[in-house]
Every structure is written in C-alpha cells, then in structure tokens.
Length: 93
Image 1: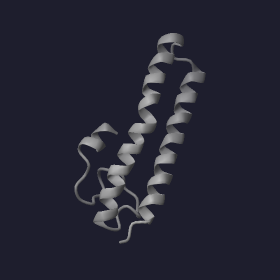
Image 2: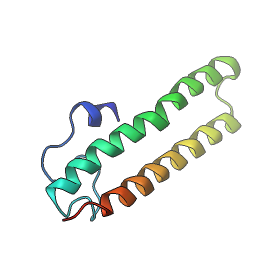
Image 3: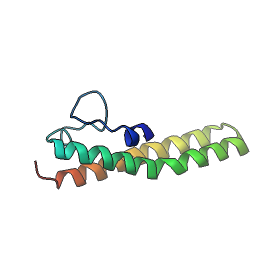
Image 4: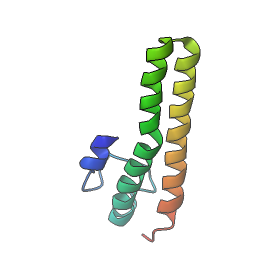
C-alpha cells in the first residue's frame, strides 16, 4: 500500500493500482481512486501490522490470532473498496 501512495499509477491501466470498472471510466476518477484508496488503506492497515507483530511476539503464531488478523485485513479491504467506489461514483465522467 505504501508503494501505491508513493508511486501511484499515472494513467489508466489493467496492471497496477486500484482497478475497477468505475475507477477506469475517466482519468479524473482514476486519479482520485488511486490517492483515496492508498490513503485509506494505510490508515486502516498500518495499525494492524503493529498489533500483529505485538501479538506474534507475545503469543506466537496461533490459529485464532491468524484468523483474527486475516478477518481484519479482509474487512479493511472491503471497507476500502466500498468507500472508494462510493466516493468515485460522485465524480463526473
């Protein structure tokens, strides 16, 4: 996610960046979606990396910790997609 923040894709492509049919409709939507999704991902996922490292240090890699971390990551990505799509739809083509 940090790479997307530092090196966002400049033009619409099918290889790199936040790619949905909505975000690829115009350059304005594309640019917004890249910045917004990268920022939101960093906000949501950065604390989880610290918490994960702390939990692994204290308790080791247990099934419940792995499942909780995985659930949090999936939930975070769902939130990023939902919020990015909602905001991107408000941008005119």
